[in-house]
Image: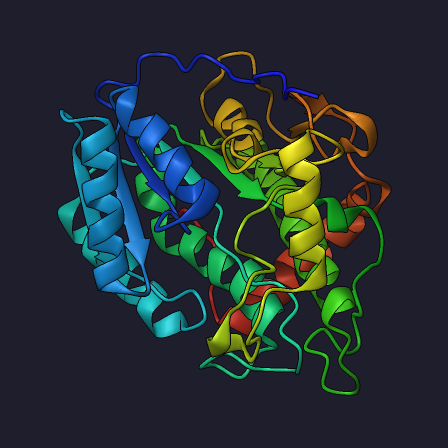
Length: 314
């Protein structure tokens, strides 16, 4: 069965400055290419500088007039997050779009970040929390749209408030779900606090559904020497247009959430097909795991404490 093409039209983003994490490959690179082609200046902060420069070249090849800036960032190190924040604040240019897209998924054994956090909780969630804190003055100056990329895995599981770093027992999938629920709660609380404080920042959630990205592929640096059975199955389904999208379609919910003039803060965008695994992007109801304002406030405070960051606008 031939796959039906799915796409959206982006508005003119000339004069807008966008930063997207995880843009050196996969759907992050596709999203960066689309933003640049629509006229945005695109910042791609990367852990591997050589890979980042190659990604920038690919973006310029797809959009010859694009302005692409490569910066250094390792979300598993709060020191590098701070360094990027200091550099961008010193430059002083407003940021209009922030897509927090980067992440890691299910390393086979428990690993930790440079700061001692469980790798998925520390990278997917805490690293991005610290990034938002560092960039908040620039986000306010740009009246920014902040998109926090969660996952279909956030529909189940929960937060282990007594042991968020999995020190008493590690289950890779539970830890991944927790990291995405935590990040979703934070994104929703960001919207609430922006509204209450008049920050002018609009915070939205997105998730890509299921697609053959590199999250479950071979990652020797994570201790995964070969592609997982899951990613092989996802590739098979994607090629046949069954219950899985493509790398290109997976980025559409975040792009829609970042650029559509109709987006409301505190909402979730994802594929609208069966199980929200594939299909055209659309606003969808929040998962039950994300609906507690009390949990969101608690996660905000926990995240500030763990990152030793105060997200303040005074």
